[in-house]
Structures are given as structure tokens and as C-alpha cells.
Image 1: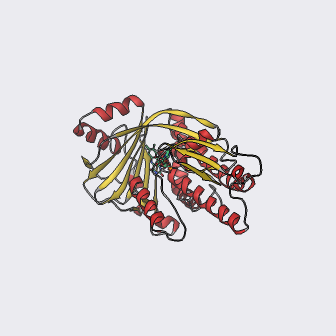
Image 2: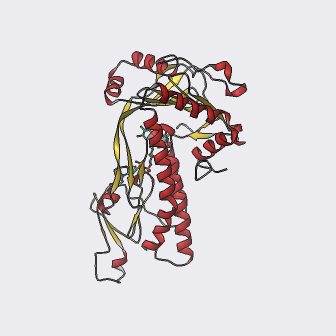
Image 3: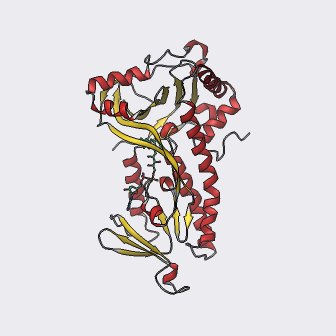
Length: 355
Ligand SMILES: Cc1cc2nc3c(=O)[nH]c(=O)nc-3n(C[C@H](O)[C@H](O)[C@H](O)COP(=O)(O)OP(=O)(O)OC[C@H]3O[C@@H](n4cnc5c(N)ncnc54)[C@H](O)[C@@H]3O)c2cc1C
């Protein structure tokens, strides 16, 4: 099993050679900027924490939810009317005071609770895979290309994950091409392809621009995912709460999806703990609304920022390119703004640009 890999640097640049910024852990006086953790590692760690915890009773049902009925079971005010009934595909039925929908972007809980979403599909797909490169890597690299960004994210040793956004047509070509051609395309995209390097000499010390490590081997299959933005109109309904991608799906260009979900889980657990402390009914809408009030504006803000980035990089026009480069320069040279961006992106700060 691959362990979390620490990132000490983040280098972001674009194909025009004008936009460039590099962040280091020392910018925010920490040892590391962030961690890259593979989804399966995260999931199995969380499951084993749950299984090893002896403080409460738990049962894991490895079955899919098929239907849900809330508060319609018997007469009002009876105990059963304060329960949700969940039917699983193996025929089991469960009763719960509160249902937490953490079932991803196509959430069945959200659908069954009748919660609507707003959003749109991006005309972009992401190609993801694991690659091996020449040297050990502790930097997260991201280059914005005309069709979308390519990211090389360290997962330990000489391995990194690629998340490469492009048009659906390009994505199917990338998946179908030979391994050799794919590796050539990746190296082309991370180095001289599409446009010049930023002027390395103009950045002092550990801020100087570097060429990412050369990718030499494909270490997994290539998978393609369509990208979309989705935000639930409500995060809560009677006895139901949504967290993570069930409540919001964002563009992966800044690797924020899981951070937002962690923010939800943390806020929600505090509100539930407060509710337990005063003996509240945990499925009561007024209690759940506190969670929605805490998380929805913050998630909405991040969703809008990421969507803005996606749109700003969907245009290839001289004046727009210069404006983007100017924004990069501000992010690179104005220290309080740089610190703010890092604190916000790493989840240390709830709102952007707080001084
Ligand atoms: C291409 C791509 C790259 C990404 N890169 C990054 C990145 O670098 N960093 C980052 O932070 N985020 C990234 N994300 C986003 C990240 O993957 C999601 O934000 C994250 O996985 C959401 O976690 P979740 O637990 O809310 O939902 P999910 O990970 O979708 O998990 C939902 C779970 O619910 C289960 N489930 C679904 N329906 C049912 C049902 N009916 N009954 C029972 N169980 C059900 C599923 O099996 C699954 O286990 C990326 C996304 C994409 C598409």
C-alpha cells in the first residue's frame, strides 16, 4: 500500500510562458504544504479506524441504498415518524434518526430526499493515471495548457499521479494511444510543448522555475472522467444531510474536492456533538440547518473561484493572457496575498483574502 506523500513545493505555470508562481511550505511557516493520498488508501484507513473503534456499536452493510422513506411511516409524533427507513439492495431495511448522504456526486440519498442541484457539465474530460519518473518528487506541478491543466502529483518514491484535463476527443485519443506515445505527450505537455518556459532567471532562490521530472513509464491504466460542477440547492432535509461530493462537485484543477468534504465532515461532527450534549433530536431540521449555514457559503465561494479559473483558462486571447499573467505575478510577489492563497487552498483558512 502506498503511504501519503508530502508536498513541499507547488509550481504552477502556463503555456504562454507569462504566468508563473511557486509556493513553498516556508511561505506559510509549515513543514509541508500538503499531502497527496490515494483514494483507496484514504478509504481503507477510514474503514479500519471505524472497525477498530470500540467506543460505539457499529455495523457495516456493504450494500447499495435503493430507496428511502422519511417520516411517513406512522401517525405524526410517534417514534417511527421520527425515523427514516432505508432499503438496501440485499433486501435489508434499516431505520435511522438521521441519514448522512456521503454517497458522491450522483448521490442516491440526495435524489431520494428530493434535493435539487444547480450546475453544468464542462466540455472537458480528465485523464488520470500513475506514472514513474526519473527522480524522487516532492513537488506538485501544474501547467495550464490551451485545453485545460495537467497536474503531476507526487505519491511517493519515483511515482506521481497525472490529472490531465482536455477535450473529450483528446481524452479518448490519449486513452487509446500507445504507452510510448502517451509518455511523449505527457513530457511534451509538462515541458516545452505548446509554448515557452517562463524566464527561470527572473525568480530568486527557491522560487526559480524548474522543469518537472521526466516521465518514463506508465504505472497504471489510463482512466477518463467527465467533469462537471454541481451544487445542491439544500444541504439538509428532514432527517437527511449531505456531505462531500453529494453536496458539491467541483472542477479538479486545484485538488480541492476532498478538502471541501473534510470541511463538511468536521463542521457537521461539531454540530452533532453539540446536539448530543443538549439531548436534541439529531434529525431535527433546525439542528441540521446550522450545518448548512456554516458550510454552504464557504463551499459556494470555492466552487465559484474554481469555476472562474476554469473559465479564465478557456480563453486564448492576448489581453486575457496578459491579465492572467498579471494575476500570477501578484500571487508570486505580494507576500500577504501569497500566504492567503496557500492558507485558503490548504484549508487553514475558511475564506480567501482575509488579512
Ligand atoms: C478526475 C478527477 C480528479 C480528482 N482529483 C482530485 C484531487 O487531486 N484532489 C482532491 O481533493 N479531489 C480530487 N477529485 C475530487 C474527489 O475525487 C472527490 O471530491 C471525492 O472523491 C469526494 O469524496 P466523497 O466521499 O464525497 O464521494 P465519493 O468519493 O464519490 O464516494 C462516494 C461513495 O458512496 C458510495 N455510493 C454511491 N452510491 C451509493 C449507494 N446508492 N449506496 C451505497 N453506497 C453508495 C460509492 O460507492 C463511494 O464509495 C477529483 C475528481 C476527479 C473526477
